[in-house]
Length: 408
Image 1: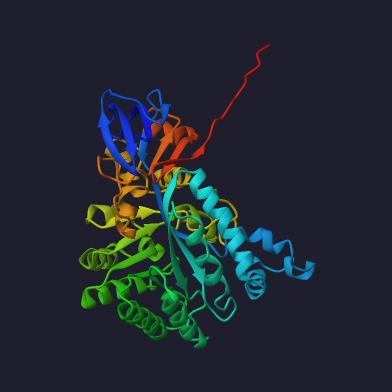
Image 2: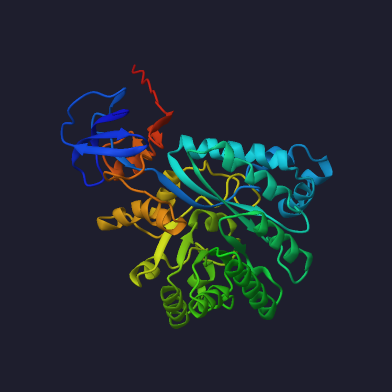
């Protein structure tokens, strides 16, 4: 064996030794015989398949690095106006460096697979996409997927169609879309249709940000789901905030279409708490109907979405933190709901992203995170250290926290 984890607590709650060899889980036994090149005494710490983050706007994250370089008059602008200036000044190297830090955080926080979005539009050109693409070669032990994203749409900036086509032709893992931001319903539908046809042309899934708004009339999620049903095409839908503001009958129809399409829904409720700028009381959460989607049999997952950008000034690229937010917002906090919550940051996003060999069974790829707690509930409650992060069978990160209390 290359590595043995002694006395790990498995997701089932039982304890066992886990043997790793050639980048795979080779054995899971109560008391594994023999020795390994490296052995770690886990002392009952919870060991899970490593986390999966299915959505992160990488090129816009850590934007404070870039904002600090801008003239004072740009820094004084509203954050979204300032973002336009920053995107125009993007360089592939600058985007790459910020993306590199994001992936270091991902590894540190126990992530084995991540999907990064890169804006391709009249402001960023292809520079963000080029910078993010470089990261795939640098982190071979981390499954890094790249999605070109037409952030500013096509109706106002038709040249963005050509940019998206060029990015997809250069190689990516899904085609991004954001039809809900178009000025009219017809424009939104044309946006969705163009992106789906592009995805079909290159045999790629479609990953759309849909209806990130309080407007119950925004229904691009339903339109995208109907397209996916008609074309029998894989679809991921992020946000779907308007679903929470629609009447129940309309929402049920949309959920039915999403279920029929076999689409995955990505909920990033912590972002909605900040971006929802409603002045009415009670202030809405802005989250989609997670529980209703789950009850209908839709696969729902949670993602980081943003880290230090104009949409969200916080974030550590930490799926354990994301899970805690989801527990509050959904809510998923008691009994079997906690297991659902765990699946939303592990197995289900791995399935949505097509991560091969995922899991904690003999034969799976050895991508594991050891949490400094004996149970999932205690890990969530304490937001504990990721004691060990093992990717492709090798120890890639270790975290220890020390606290000293002084009495008297």
